[in-house]
Image (cartoon, rainbow, N blue to C red; front, side, top):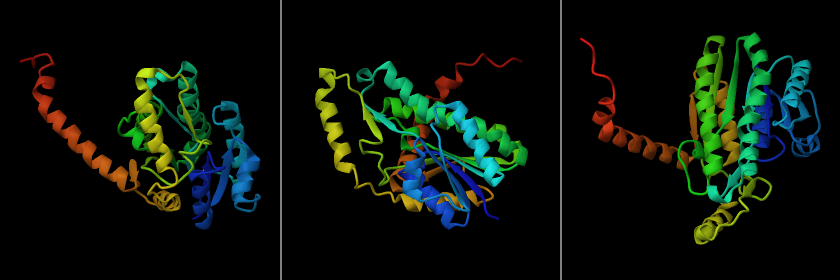
Length: 280
């Protein structure tokens, strides 16, 4: 049975590939982006199975309107893909409160806005699948990634709790954790840097930014293959809570699990000793 997908951030990058993969599978797609014209430029004009909408995810009212228009056109939302977001990279001291607010507004509060708008539709249908785009930054911290990692860890915690809340309604939640994929993530259109330079960070900042520039366009992950994998997950009766995408993401999870287990084992007895003594 064909599905209706609602995808945010579908004017470029991975969002476009997800929309194309869903359409290729015979599904219907509501593709959204800040500028509807850019969505149409990337995916073509609206048709029997494609609808493009303007959506700034930071606008809760616009999210409600977009969902209503999608349901009016296709009757349902079977798969929600919270893909819209961007990376703000920089040492925390070199960021500003405005940087923090903007990063969370899009990556976290925008995701919440769209999810809140779509949930009544899915809950009424007693079915659905939500994909929340995280990152390897959601499984481990990284230098110059304090703001971005914070948003992705927030998405991970939210998604885990949401999955428990929605399971009784037949709604599934999957966190997508890509490693480096060859999208526009490291291009000026998708990434922002802290502008408040502090001399103590100068040498490391310069070196780190150089590595970002060197990696752009050379990332090992194929975004179309990830998009096709998501279509496969959307049709699986028992999809995972987390999906590590790409060899780097898989190897990072292996290393993370090993580190967590070793740390837990090392401090286990001290941790257990912090409880009150058991009562007789």
